[in-house]
Image 1 (cartoon, rainbow, N blue to C red):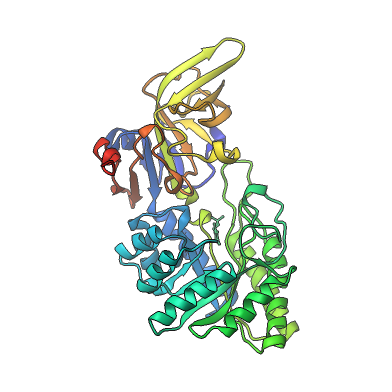
Image 2 (cartoon, rainbow, N blue to C red; image 1 turned 180 degrees about the horizontal axis):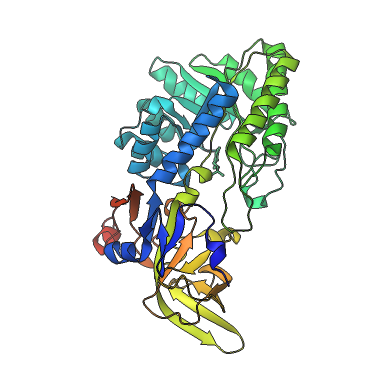
Length: 437
Ligand SMILES: *Cc1c(COP(=O)(O)O)cnc(C)c1O
């Protein structure tokens, strides 16, 4: 029933009876590295980075920037890849800054986000030489100014503005509306107030503005609407305060496919459309063309990821439901529990069998909401020891993983050019008690 629907990205294939990922046998990888296991297709990550950089260059020339929103998946190796690919990055905590720093990522290319940076965060980021802060609120402006002043330097920053746009996606991931916990709204006058405050402070430099409206966006529309609002705001601020915005960061949120029924994002076309619209609007408003930034997170890494589990208990409750329990769950994938996320699943060692048994795939945690996916089809022959694959797990999986029930987090194995290597080790029992005094 399901097998033609598993090819949601061209790094997914079948060889013999087995599912392949990045051209490699997933059953063999599960055997070699154990389960649960995160796989990451490095070639795919690099290809997507290049696709973004090429599209942005074509649309904006030298006035384009791409930042990887590293909260989607943060570990040392990913920052090395981003450095090698010439990507800027977003970071949101000292942990991400330190991980990037430890990987030798040049932090002058980093943008520090978050709606609540503590004084310690501010000091640490400045100490490590983070290029830009993306400032959420007025208190933060003062905190950055104070810290930069103490060091006798001037810290560049962008102001996060909420353009007041409902992206028509999930409420839980909608961040550009006026009542969002993120940023300061134009509509309420708070954005203007922030600009005024920023201009009054000596140890910061207002380099431009930022907005981020949604997630899982497949067309240009949301970006066009926010670009319009933001460019008009830039014109208004120029008229009122005589300032030139060097940068306008339009955020991330580009969509990826979790199911075969999801649309395919035509990235070059979408970026080109945004490019044309921005250039026209800039000309119409008579403002200087800012550097335009994009911050994709999910779309850089999501379909480069796959999780492999071993099947344990198979529970058939006649006339009710069938359960397949796997050796992971909400500790390595919280997204179904968090917002009912959809996934494509298959049995990696029986990928050619009819997937005709309706079931729920559940985790091993002591929590009934610990579900990977409900109402999926698996081969009726499913049994303990089979390898179950969950696709599109490269974004917001490892980075959201937990130790609930004192379960160790899975390792990350990178797949590159037909070979595999460990980028993050499996968490051991010793690791689990390592902080207990
Ligand atoms: C989360 C986030 C992103 C990335 O969003 P994706 O949906 O993963 O592309 C970009 N910018 C900001 C400010 C974010 O909070």
